[in-house]
Image 1: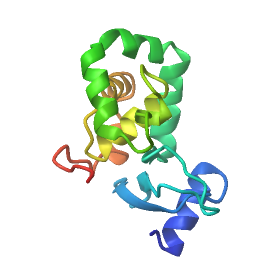
Image 2: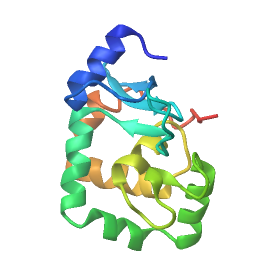
Image 3: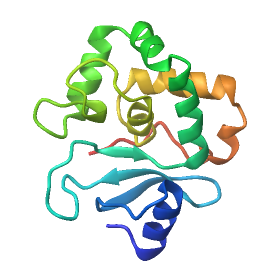
Image 4: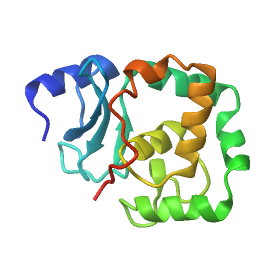
Length: 154
């Protein structure tokens, strides 16, 4: 699991100490955590359904702006239902739940982008990345400088 430096960095990025053990799977060009892989349970042992979490402050804000402009509905309309179902199946962390804890459909663009950046199959993540970079191309220089589509979660 994460060391003290990463624990402190993630706490600073999300504004509170993380309640779920994690490992960093993607760092920004400045070395800060960008995407983290979460343990299946929180520190008290309670199960949780998220697998990957976007913690990069700039990317998180950009995705939030996209969501506030109707991004969830637009992503749902842009991606075929079959591709979305496959994405949820490839993500399965908890029984009956897919990306971002959703049972079906699109619930959270942040979760889809985190899954994609960690190497997962997420057409919604691709759509989100395209839209974010189209609107804010400067994010690629730092937040996504170390991303390789070749990585895959196990």
